Length: 135
Image (cartoon, rainbow, N blue to C red; front, top):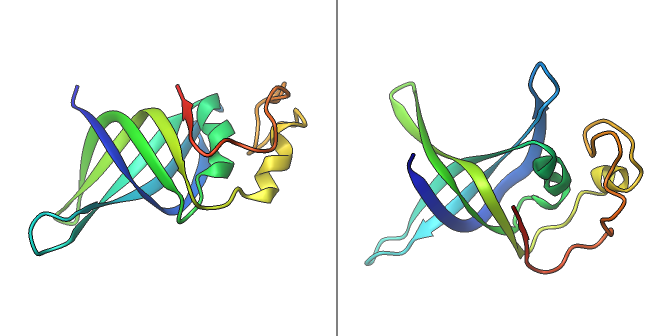
């Protein structure tokens, strides 16, 4: 396994998808700047976080926010290009961005659907600290 840790800006709001058995997969992109020498270069990573942790975190993973991610480095090829990815184990919110109101209401209600699994997350408040680590 190839582990990697990155920190950067979220490029697009997180999107929740589901497998055939209903498991949530949350995906978003992260831009990481490399300022080595005179040239500035940006690397884009497609990040995925599986399960309930991803569902709970999705409303806070919004474009413009800063995030640190560690997990397994993945790559895929498409049309002759190599795309970098991270299958996240740990995600730390570093600030910026705004939570999506459409999903946040579902976190505390216990309703099923995109925002929370059956049973909900009643122990979570509507606000999240400036930096929060999800394991």
